[in-house]
Length: 52
Image (cartoon, rainbow, N blue to C red; front, side, top):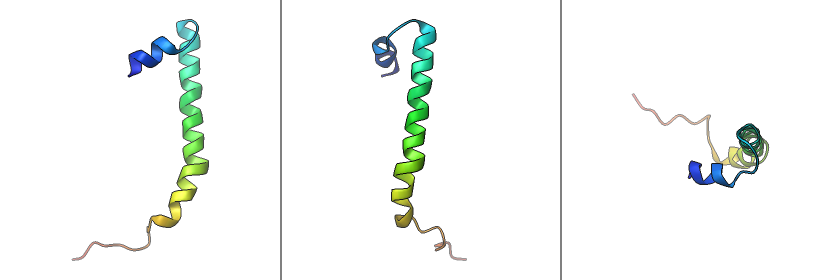
């Protein structure tokens, strides 16, 4: 998969690295500001299910 992505990215190696870094950063931003806030109400961090 990574080889396919590397071949599909345009430009030289430097451009490919920068493009891949921007894509990873964009995915992180989308997860942080869109996906995680949507999932937060479904995750119960206050309820501990560990019993002694």
